[in-house]
Image (spheres, rainbow, N blue to C red):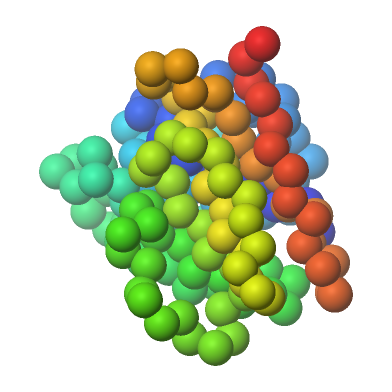
Length: 152
């Protein structure tokens, strides 16, 4: 299963992001969405899983979005939160994938049997950080993550 992971769009959904996500069977947005049209465009591609980011907290359109979401991706239990600081110190033992955003810094890191993923920011460039999203190939026995650069 191909899964697209995007975060920190801050109201900007680049054509390059839409092109990279084409063909995904699921899309995950790790918060700081910016405006509801971003979610509408993503949901038109594939089923969408979303959490609110700190910049979405006061937006009435985002009131219904959770701050933390547990989901199953092809048998892999995942935890989705916007900020790494909100990840529990002790994870449920079945969590094998932790997805965060917030820092705008892409991260792919295995900690034992658990993959920690931050797709980076796909929205407006912040400082000199890259503009990225992530794609996951979720198989029964493995997850293959990779980052996609949206700007040269």
